[in-house]
Structure formats: C-alpha cells, structure tokens
Length: 408
Image (tube, rainbow, N blue to C red):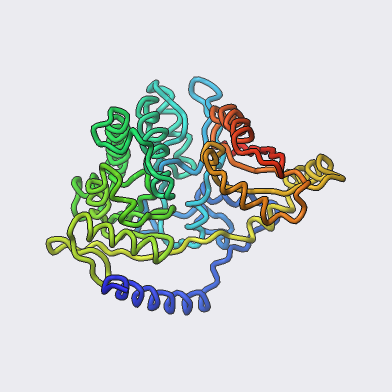
C-alpha cells in the first residue's frame, strides 16, 4: 500500500467513526403521511417531511445551496403556447437532500426538452420556479454532442471500464473533438446560468460526469465561490483514465473545486492516483495539493432509501403491475436478469449470458432480461438492439427474452 493509499484509508476510517456516531444521535428518516407524494411536495418548497411540507420562508435562512445536475428532478411537457405540464421524474438528488434543513435549496439543470422560442423559455422558467428549479436551455445540436455524444459515448463507458470506441482513442478524431467541444460548450452554458443566479455566500454542488468542467468555469467567474463536485458513478483506475485524450483537461477542471466527493474510498483513491500520475501533483492526507492550493478529496456514500421502495409496493399502480405480471407468467418458469445497463451495452458480452446459464438450476426454463430505456425516442432503438442481442448471444441452453422498462 502506497503512502497516499495509507493516508486516505486512515482518513476514511476516521470519517466512518464520526458518521457512525452521528447516525446514532440523529434520526433523519422522514415521517411521511400516508398517500403523500413526498417528492412532489419537497420540490414545492418543504424543507423536510418532518416539517409537514410547509414552504420555508427563505428570508429566515442565511445559506443557500445551488444543486447543479444535468437533468432537473422534473420533466416538462408543453401543453400550450405558454403552458406546461410538470412531473417529478429524476429524484436521486432530491432523495440525498431530504434531511437537509435550514438551507434554501435551488435546483439548476437541463429540463430535457428543446425550447427554442423565447416565449416558451419564459413560461417554462416561471412554472419551474414554483418547484425551486431553474432551467438551462440547451439547443438540439449541443445536446447531441454533449449528452448523447461525449457523456454517453465517451465518459460513461470509460468510467464503467467498457473502454472507448476505437475511433475516439485519438484526440484528432473528428467525432471525438466535436463531442468534446460540445461538452465544454454545454458546461459553459450551465456555468452562465449558475453565475446569473449566484449570490454571495451560496454553496454550489455540481453533480456527476456531465459537469466536470463546471468547477473550473465557476472559479474563473468567482475564485471565492464555494464549489463541490460529486461523482455518482465509479471513477476508473489511472491506467484506464489515461486512455482518454482529454484526461488532463478534465482532471484539472475538477480540481478547481474546493471539495471532490465519491461514492467509495476506492473511487477517491483512483482519482488521487490519476491526478498524481497524469498531472504530477502531490497527494496528501486530505486530497490534492497543487502550487499551494488544496482540493479536498473524500468518500461520501449516498445510499438508497429502502423504505421508499417498501412504501411503493403498497401503491395502486405498483399493485396493478404486480398483478399483471403474475397473470402474464402464471404457470410458467422463468429466470430473470435485472440490469441497469441499457440494451446496447449488452452487445458483445457473451460472458454475461454464459455465466448466468451456468448458475441456473433449471436450464430448460426461459430467461427474461429486464433493462431500462431512458427516453421515448430510445425505446424503439433499444427494442431493435435487444432483438440483435438475442440473435448474437443466443445459447443452446436458454432462449432469451427482453423486457424493456421505459424510465422516461
């Protein structure tokens, strides 16, 4: 174990001891009223469930937290020239903040739809303000290059050890360069919105691999701004990260933050190792030091609220779906593979299917693979990919079926 690894391990153990004491002393589990849509109510302004969702008087609080993520925790559908239907959709960041009190939280992010006209942007901004959300309006080309391109085609596979597309291994690749330019352009658009709404003393919490350049752009605007960047995915080893053509730029952009957080100690260690090996900076007990400036690096695991899933089992919608599945598969035996990977990421992974068939006790039963689809547009494409996977990965043991769950 290297000196850096030893120091970070000691720091993690101290942090765990403190967290254990804190968890024993304070119960942050929300006491929810039966039938409440707590996500909806929280976004309307409740500081916590325990406060019975009363909207806080922002004048009472001296601190504000600006939570910046690729997507807002609501989705929008245009119902008229100046009217919108809003629905809570992406709630993982909201869940992480349910216990936060005495701080006004504002959400900044892309709303997931193209709104090219000024009238639509004004009306949507007004509607989102009721849920403490501030939109970032991205044009279709930027979304294509930034989100569908660099985020999903480059960063996500690399951070999950799936490697880069062959044509993107060289920085001179036209595909890579256009996607990387789109990524930086989108991050600058996020930064423009944050700086417009920023007030002295605000803390800015940047989320995930979509916004790795955001800390840099924010610090260029105001070097005293308190900026945190947190990664919700794995961070790969330095050997994997160095295959990325833009590796140094991304690392330096993230290091502009005051605090960099990861889900686990291992991911934090990988980040420190990548910085020391690729950038030549010094790793310390608390993080990364470069030319006298310290960026703290630490692990802050964000878990799932299991009680939410238990409560969901009692809702009419879920009960109806369970009944439908029981009727659909009554009298037949199936094995299930439930994965968070999209169908396209199962291509070329025969080991997944072979290993599964080896541990299945009844090789004659059919296997159903449950995969997510993240947009209406992607649903048909995912179905087509699923059919291809079935043909390519079929074995003599199992006939495979796909069940694609839309998460749009």
